[in-house]
Length: 357
Image 1 (cartoon, rainbow, N blue to C red):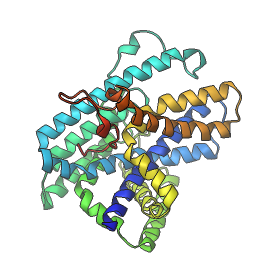
Image 2: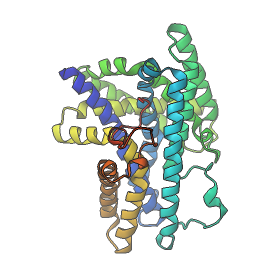
Image 3: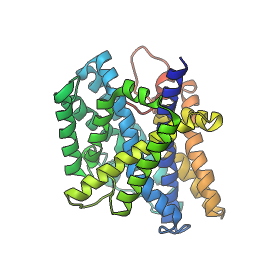
């Protein structure tokens, strides 16, 4: 039982680390755009580095749960449920963020035009691109891998890699297909599966230290050589895209390695584990909370370093509190689609953004 708790904690911590990086990154972009901090400073470098792998890491962890979900529900039912949930969340949070953006136009870095573009739901807003992208990547993964084993599974993974390489750095403003580069990471997670990942997380800490440092070194080499992530708009050649994919894989290994090691730290590990279990609410709502806090703090001339820290904390803590309160205040629909015969959505509001549905 102790091993089971430890390995689940490490997976949640990996999600927590990734989504915290997302929140900090979006706060940093706001500070860059407002001119409060230089884009070419240390924070800008940190943003560029983590941007390579933070979302692919979330996609990889989501893929880990696909085999179990398929065994429970079957492909068609599972994909239909995911489409309904992620589609609902996409529409709801597109509306929420649009209203908030328009209402705060007088103090925004870039005011949102009040015209027919507000109705262009096929053009994803900020972080919401990930919801349809996750569904499409999941659907492709189910089609290519499903419950296949052996050579068939490896062939499907190869096709997924080819799709991602072809779409690497391609970001058309169309929902779903703007992030096809993520397909291989969801597929890889499904190919590894939760049992294997859990077993690996039980490895000796010294082994994980060595693996983490090795992967970190390889990532640094690839990134310094010009490798970029799938969501960084680029026109790299095949070699550059392959190097980018290798860099992302190294970044994912580093994320998981840090998570495994942090799991032994009571306070930090437990905090990130809780955040990881609430990846969905944090991912959906952090823009509203973090941007709101950043704008208010900048208006009253708080130093940018303090703004970065406080707005990031608010961007994580705000959604966590909202997720706890929502089921008690008839706001559960913010994190789950309406379901017949259900009056609360406590469990879904607390589920992470994974494929385990």
